[in-house]
Amino acid sequence: MDKEKIKHLLQSVRDGSVGIDRALERLKSLPYEDLGFAMVDSHRSLRKGFAEVIFCQGKETSQVVGIAQKLMENNTTVIATRAGKEVYEALSSARGDVYYNQTARFIRIGPVPESVSRKEALVVTAGTADIPVAEEAALTAESLGCAVERLYDAGAAGIHRLFGSMERINRAGVIIVAAGMDGVLPSIIGGVAACPVIAVPTSVGYGASFGGLAALLTMLNSCAPGVLAVNIDNGFGAGYAAAMILRSENP
Image (cartoon, rainbow, N blue to C red; front, side, top):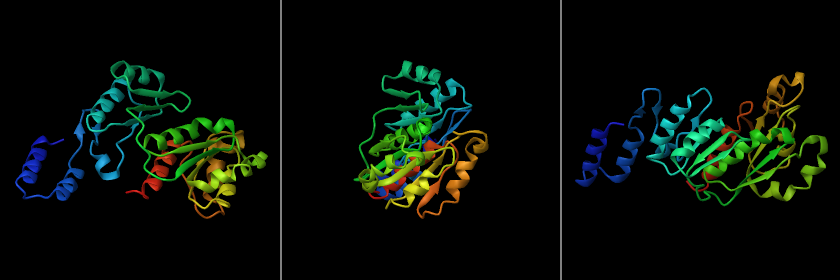
């Protein structure tokens, strides 16, 4: 971050030559902070409403800690995904407000924000094996200020389990559906839900599922309108998109 630019901008606000709204617009475009191994976008929350999220896979633990510490200087809540237990232990040794979900490999530093929407996100899985991806989606949405309900193991092989929960489907503002195998559940829900459905293909299934590719293709070819698909096992992307949809009600 260019501290001299910020200092000059603050002075311009004080002397009245730049209005507050204009100053905020300039802050949104100010540069990143260079840590040598990462360019930390500390102003992303000004542009998008949510802070930059740390993808831990492939990073050294010390790098994740360094990025997290820098982000926490400007944000009350920071998220880290695909995080191993060693990352959690390193972060929690420095801070007391670190939450870790080992199933989802998800870390949240700081408090859960207040809800940003009157409606909630409903996270559904076709089977129990899809829960790790679904939990990543649910925890992401919660950590971005969304109320979240969960409906797990309600797949097409026992569709009566799903239709027993129509009240929950009808009151949702957005629905995230994680499914592997044939990946048909998002289309079924998309045919009865009045809100957007975010389909998450999971790499669950036997050989012909091709590590989630079969489910992804099913979801991309959905005949139900209003069904959108993210990448295989991308629970984070689904949770983030759900938060943006719900947040649009209260910009």
